[in-house]
Length: 204
Ligand code: ZN
View 1 (cartoon, rainbow, N blue to C red):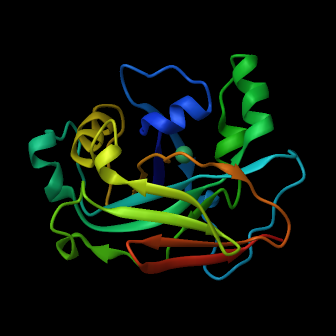
View 2: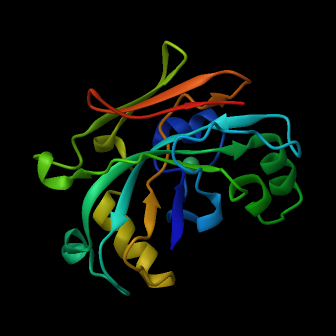
């Protein structure tokens, strides 16, 4: 399986990083080796100094699809979860400045925290009306609302599947809202969809 990540899908996060508003979604991929195994602490590697959390709603693809019409995209997923796109921000800035690919800063081992539990989308009346959040230790550091996405889930699936065939089990990280910040040793991160705890991880 693979993980397709969407960059810059929330206007406020774009402002925070002083990025331009893109005319099309920014996409990048993490390999399956990026997934942090369940219950493991998040051990930060030594090749960068500033690791950032980015909490994101995650969509799990349920069947093969290519050139999916956004109108029918809802048939390609049944469940949503929550994750952290762990980013080596200093390394990413360095690579961006050099015009180089971001993989080393975004796709390294354990850079994808994914909730063990996924929730049936039928739990939600409207997928573009979901609140999610991230707590660092006991403080809420990120609050997301899917109604603020620049590209909605079904539009993303349509767009992504023009470039990458989607397969059963693939995960889409749908972008992070404002509030990204540093991860430090012994921090505990807890992610929520509405009021439901989806994951809890410790940084080591
Ligand atoms: Zn992200």
